[in-house]
Image (cartoon, rainbow, N blue to C red; front, side, top):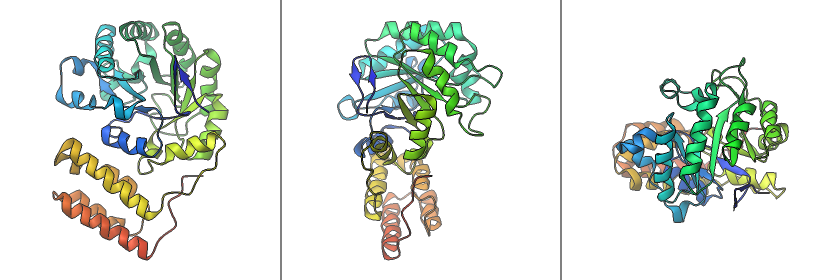
Length: 334
């Protein structure tokens, strides 16, 4: 089971969602090595790209050869600026450009970006038109159901996007005002799937292969986009892809494999960011350790040490102790 965006066929129907501070190059490399399909970058502010703001330009670091297929997600509110940022990303080798209409953060919506654009359908049309015209690669769009429960206009936005040349949609089954509260309404995404002749991905609360299938069926979607559940479980994307395709889903990684994944991820963080990578890796380490006995001591070392060598030693000691008295492997949610 796969999805075609324009003339490009994806490896499978499971896409890694863009997550600020999470889906950077090291994380994408880990997911790719474990069977990831289409990977999406962190949200990148288009205005900052044009002004070469260092923090945003760093998010544009990717290897077209190693990371393909990769999508670069852009946020903004000015069509011309979004178009120019898209040109830059495409020139660097991005396979797809994604337009952000989904971020609920106040610092983003306060500048008419992210999910604030759900209230501006005419502006959405101009942005889509400008970005599509600016690049030769397919352009996609990620959005929410609407701004709030009284304005569930995702089908309208979807129709506008399709008319302006957008080639795939991802819909988070919550409104902006819900942020991440309550449960994602997968059934509501079906209205988008039925409104346009485009592949639609359903997103929100997909934390297991079984949940992915339920979400896909409820939404009438072509595939799923998985975000927060992949933190600490970068193998989850491939497991969901196997399940949706009707293939046998193998066993979860054993403790030795998890040790290797975790240390590889820390290595990549240090290579990408230098010594600063140790601090940035803390949130990832916390996710890998969720629910494991004795994890508090390792988290304490990771959170307070400036010596990467000491952290690697602590990781080895932690997993040696797990090997001597192994708990059941962490299962995805039912």
